[in-house]
Length: 402
Image (tube, rainbow, N blue to C red; front, side, top):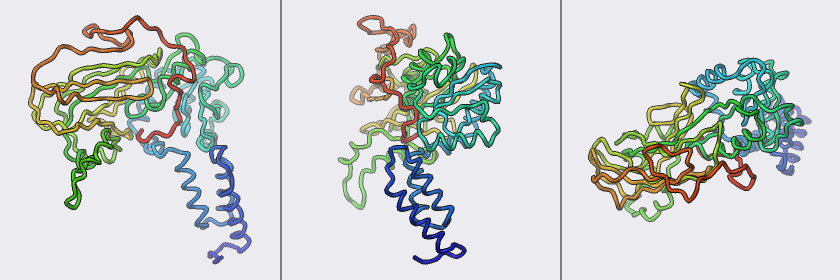
């Protein structure tokens, strides 16, 4: 084995031994022991190629990459800081779901919480968060629980129910990280009656957009003279990263229309569906339906991933099968559905017409319906009790776009 300048032969040999142990270590502990072995190997030989490569692969496997641009999202951080300062009162017990690097937990401690209990089931993330919290002198006021929130037991993990439940467990369409199921359980079993929440509520919206660049990227029609259109049926939904979003140059052809509203203080995991019309107010070519969200963290404090917002959140666009010329006054009928964990959306392209159609018909929990909407439901429904087999919480699951 070639010697590296400044590394003693015995150090290089020990590093190699530790790397081999790391390669044979099962990952049932979330990569924690493997990470310790690789760190030890690199302490003996900082230039060990296999240790560097293995460590980076391990981190990418268990720590979603969106954590880092999220922490660098100044607007998002400031909004959460402002909302937490407004809603935390001295003496509060705060439950923070989805610890990550510990930022929101530290913001709650800084705002005056008596104690913050923050849960993070991924061992590598939990370990790093504990170090961040210690480095900032808050280890005596923040406890990192290495478990899912639905595994927390009052009296064992937390001495009393929470006065405030804090979370940021949403993806590009609010639902994909299991926010509704997770918060339904937390508010019912881990929080005091009338406990406060951050965020308070959220709304999903849809609008018609034009973007030839989006279509060119996600549904290329040909390459080198070959017809590729049959392959494009495999890409009907575009998960757009923030970097890609900036190059797509999406142009709105109409304003956003509300699809679903969610109350995070009284979460409901009842599935919902809506058939509605998206208006076109500008001439252009319809390429996709863009879905975005707006969350109210506290009164007047909003975060969004709409067309005009920046930040780390990606976007989700549902591509039309055929680009369609549109004029002001035209409408596209869509049907959107959710099961409290996933969203689907279908555009009724065959019905596209400039003729105005009746108001939206919505199938959804009564609490979500608006006065002008017609509700179709066999019977009134109440909040379903939380159960692990229904919309299982996945607040720490890897999500393709955050």
